[in-house]
Length: 289
Ligand SMILES: [Zn+2]
Image (cartoon, rainbow, N blue to C red; front, side, top):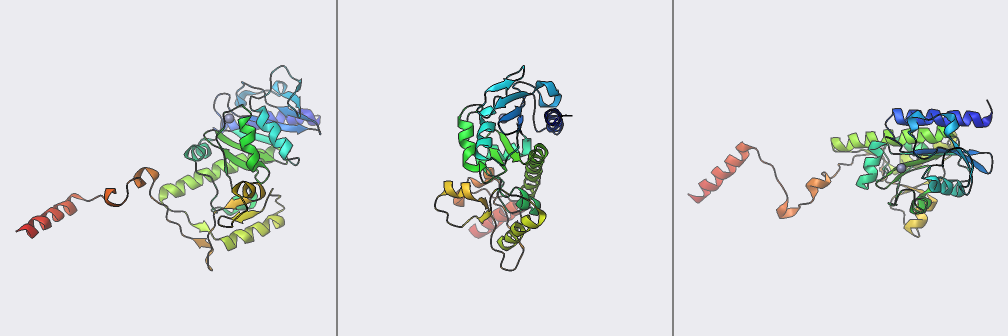
């Protein structure tokens, strides 16, 4: 098989896996890979990623002009073009709507806490790109802020985006994001996340080299004061990791769910058993006598 026919088959396979794992529904999501220096091979618009065939793909130039293919390229082509423009090292781009990660994107909660060593050594932090109307120029504009320093990000109220040195590496990063989101959700439902201490995060960062992992940017601590938030996002991966003071894990009890935390002080809700309430009333009556 030629390089091109192998890549066509790989896109079909990755699309099939994404659909099988529920990362996309209906015609959601899109995939592209570089074809040589000046062309892209891309999924077409309006097809289910679970049922593609190699002949469906489009070939475009780096400005999005269609060079080959019966179908039109993905409606999110502008986002893919922007990623390749900003990241000459990126060979592939994957976009999907994995439900747990997208839930975090809808809740406005980035996956940026130091919780799992393998996420810190590979993706670092997973920020949320600002909300943008899908398929418009707004989306590449939103993605631009983070793409230089991150191989994966959430898209507010939309989905997730990953890039890689080849198609499978971009796809595996999508798997890692959804897996991380699942684990984070469970920990938060259980009411606590033990965070990896900053000293340990620094150690893990050094291990990136040992493992041969090429991360796009270094990890920086959440409370370092960058010149500006926009610059910081472009230059490093901001991870929430408190000082451990000798401990490698720092317990963090999460605040109550947002729905419960609205009322505070005198308006806060308290819960009593029937027996506790009866005792309180009895005490009150007794004190009146
Ligand atoms: Zn989408």
